[in-house]
Image 1 (cartoon, helix red, strand yellow):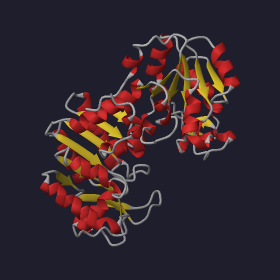
Image 2 (image 1 turned 180 degrees about the horizontal axis):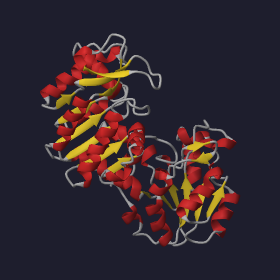
Image 3 (image 1 turned 90 degrees about the vertical axis):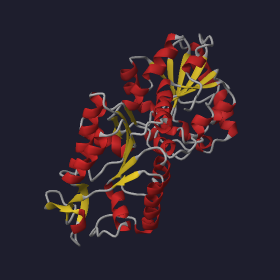
Image 4 (image 1 turned 90 degrees about the horizontal axis):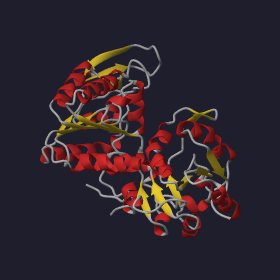
Length: 400
């Protein structure tokens, strides 16, 4: 288990009147400038409440979009202040400066327990390049630093790792929970652990799969990724999406799995169409009978049954990646069915379920099972890298 400095360690200090920088992820999804999902704001609420209770002045640091080190009005965090105020039920101050006289005046005049949102950290070239001068400039008005943005923990940026060189640093409740959940799954000695890995490419998940081979006793592989494994077995997949350059890698993974006694479960049937047009014809085929002009777009009924059976025999499940073209009906059925099974088993106390990755979260949300899983990570890249056994810079600097 990874042990990091948390809010309990921070709260041993007298925080009244102190300035605490809180790294959050306010890179919220928007459509036409309007915020469409406030999950990331809600995730930092426990940390904000504890800090406010201890009468410190909270300065939230975050990025928004990819402005590449220069000011971009459309990517200003000023636009999301009303939404942050609504979710936190607090008056939120805004600072366009990250240091200097105006920033110092603002911090001095606001009451203890107040919250300030600082302008987009990525407007500064020193942020993503983690320049010392920028980290030092950020730190000079800061007494303590709290990182509650696990989604950027895999980035060695000034507002993630740079600050920790100059001020006492700790994890927030959301980041702490994420680290505990993932490391607990990986370090668990439970012999009944299952991973469900989907998505399009093996190339983006080689390290993840290889690390899981020694941590679980079975891996279900679905999505377009499974097509490459089927090719490695000599199967025909028609015109389906695959990575032909990764066939040797797929064979090696299966060989390693056999040696480590980890079962690899591939689709035995599939839902196939001749094109991606909505409302087009589709049929279900045994995996040995995929037509030459067919596109595999979802797993079939028998594959769903096999996965359900595997879930029923396990105690812990990690899910990362959809099992078909879930965004388009009727090719959402396989992913939705697995989400339903995991939901039911979790609610009945039969399994611990952990899910993560952008498309996985979107698929679970689409199926309305978000509140039924033991834990769902919204971190994306950081979640995948931690599952792959990689060291995350933002976590390493917070270790006890």
